[in-house]
Structure formats: structure tokens, C-alpha cells
Length: 389
Image (cartoon, rainbow, N blue to C red; front, side, top):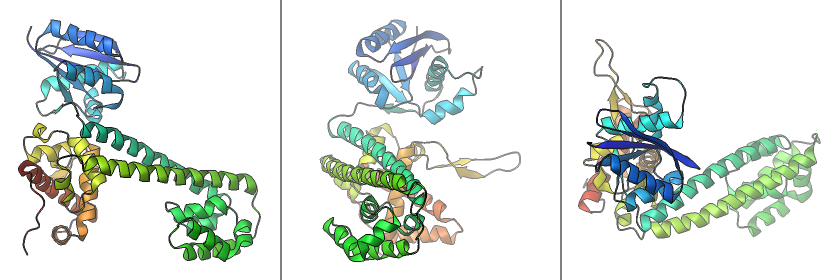
């Protein structure tokens, strides 16, 4: 038999694997337990079908980490098909039901038909550590965002003026609402005591925060229903957000330390707007740059290329690409936005705005331009050097 393609729909407890031959016929389809022994058995079954096997998966880590480790230990070739591509391709196949077997077949079929899928290679040393740390950081950021949302909702129920007056993403504001939850508590404490408390905790702008809190407390004299219960919830949520902020700060320190032990770290942070956190996200998303044969290939992977949107006699219409690696797209977009303080980035942005592009479009255009720069820097192993004026 000739070459086969095996698609794996990964899950927490088990996966489903479907193998297709060169004619698209199913030669293998079964449930695979998420343990080393069964994955090794699957590799043996696939090799008995063909000595040339390409594996495809829609999750580049996480629940698929053990499976990937087994495949790489057996020197198997693995390609990555983004989940959004699976979702879009599923509708082409017969039936409406979403099943693990169907998704695995979609993954295998796309790997068989497409030549543009990026190969997944094992992360070693620093890159493996950064992969774990960046994933954990994203989880903590999501937890923090949800906690702040709940905090705002709880504070509105007891002290709406304070919720409007304070930025609850900052340490100082969180310290205020953790201890002084109701208008009565704020009035009894007074401006000086609140300011002293904030200064003792190292909060910035303690005087202004205390004055703002007292002003809002004087404007609300009514005792609201369930005020004590709501106040206790506000205090707990504020403490939770503060704890998450401390954990993120420690994690960022560890992330930065490990990032700068990577050989390409100094090259990346020499580019304006690309700090250690975004640089780490870039390294994790891209992996080995040799997987991309050009800057255009890297830009396509990040979803930063325009795609045709023609119809009938209307040609030459382009629209923004909606696919691509969302993490990598965010890295390029955020670093481009942060680089607007640099003269050359600002000049490019202003030129795009003068051409009639909106702010978001201009930043995206700058992000696409910076893909070429990053590509050349890493290819040539050179630091960023601004062009002479």
C-alpha cells in the first residue's frame, strides 16, 4: 500500500483516529485511549498499513501532549490543522452529526489534500518550558478577567458610585474595595485613614484614590438591601483578583527569565514593541522557523494576509483573513500597536491612516509589515536596526 494519512481528534480521556489511503478510503478507524501504550499500539497498526504515514492533529499540545510525545519518539511526521479549519471543512461531508470519528476523518482528509499545513516538531528545553508557562499565563489572565467582571457586578449592587469611580483592574482600587465595601465604611474611615492604608500597601496615587472614594460615599446615604452580604462578596472577589495579580507578576518574572535563555530572545526584543511576554508567545506559536519557507508563509499562518472576495464581474476585492493562528496574530497586532511610539512605525501607521484606513486596519497593515522584518531578523540572526533618517 502507498502512503496513508491518519487524523486524530484529541480528547481528554480518549482520542479517535482515522487513517485514509491515497484514494481517500478509510483503512483505520478506532478509539485510542489517552495513554502511552495504546498510542504506541496505534502507531504499529498504522505502520502495518504503510511505511509512509503522515499524522495530523487539531490540538498542538494540552490533551494531545502525550500522543505527540509518543509520535515524535517514534520519528513520525505530524502536521497541525487548526480547529477553525476543521469546523469549516466539516460541512463538506455528509451528515449533520458532529462525532469524534467524523472530525478525525476531516482532519485526515485535509492533511491528505493540503500541502500548506505546518509540521509540528518536538519542543526542547527552553521552548517546552515556555509552552507550559505561556499556556498557564493565558489561563490566569482569563481567570482574572472573569473575577473582575464578577467584582464589578457585585459592587454595583452595593456601591454603584464607587464601581464607576475606580479602575478595578489596578491594585490601589482593589485595595480600597477589599477593605471599604460600603458608603458607610468609607465615611467612617475618612480620607486620611484610607490614604494611610493604601500607602502602607504600596498603592500608587493613594491620595487621589482616597479622595475619590470619600466623594462617592458622601453622594450615597441610603442603606441598600442585602448590603452586608454583597459587601462580603465584594471583599472576597477583590482579594481573589489581588491574588491573581500577584501570581501573574511572579509568573511573568519566571517567564522573562526563561525567555532570555533562548538564543533568539535578544533578537526578538530588539524589535520595538516586542517584549519578553510577546516574544515568548511568538516562540511558542512559531517553534522552528524552518517550518516556514518564506515571510508570506509565516504571515498566512498568522492570518495576516488579505484574501480574495470576488463575485461575478466584481474582481480584485480583498478582505481580512479570519483564520490563522490566533495567538500569533495577537502577538503581531499587540506588538505593532505598542511600537507606535517608534518613529518608523508611527510614520507607516500615519501613512495608512492618510490613505483612508481605520485605526484597526492601519495597525493590521503594520503588523503584516513587521512579519517581514521579524522573518529577516531571525533568518539572518541580526538585531533590529532602524533605517537612517
